[in-house]
Length: 287
Image (cartoon, rainbow, N blue to C red; front, top):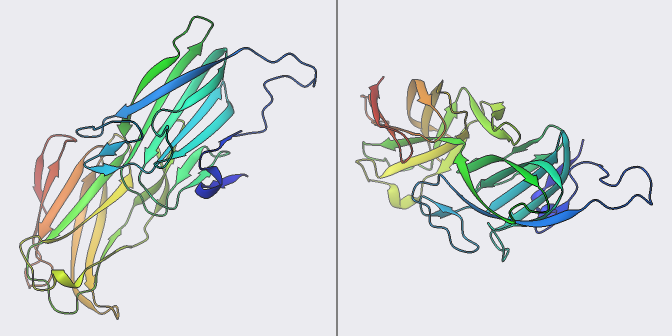
């Protein structure tokens, strides 16, 4: 099984699998090809796309992967990062014939590509977009394509309403179910985990209230709504617990933000939930 780490892929065009386009004979004639440029945009809230910029919610994507498949075989893969001059406008040399080209744009970190299982997993998931584009390349086919990607993450945001006490150093969000990977062929969530997600609390937040202290975490998500229980804990630097709350059956789905707010440190741990969409329609629930 081959796994590619990002530093090895940056700016490189590589074969996904050991696939020969030229047949078994060394003397076989090369197939005809055409250079095709793809201009990537997407369902990024209010998109602001300029050359070498892909942004969503005011945050730039850091990575773009393109996987070129003919039938079940991966012919080539390219990875771009935000420092590349043609970031978001990749040009591929495509063999004449039918292709499925899979695009993944993300600002997640710690990505690992597994071309055998056809997925990407991140150590930290952030906003991520995906598209399957069918292209038939012929002598007369287009040489430029505009590609609109779809968001494939759900966002859970928690805001703490009561006063943040002295010594609070971190918020720890622990979901029972969370997804850290994307199958780049069918766009589904993979790599399920229940690992805690720790967010550092800057000293400047001590003594604040009214939702100033908040944190957003992202899970790769399918378009169908799913639910998970979530525990939120505030801790000191020595891991002493200052306050906890539990969210039961938090509803999540791709392209939607689920927002919870409430008290964490006082005796009342009642939280209220809203769903935000730039994303999809708002919805209000309580637990």
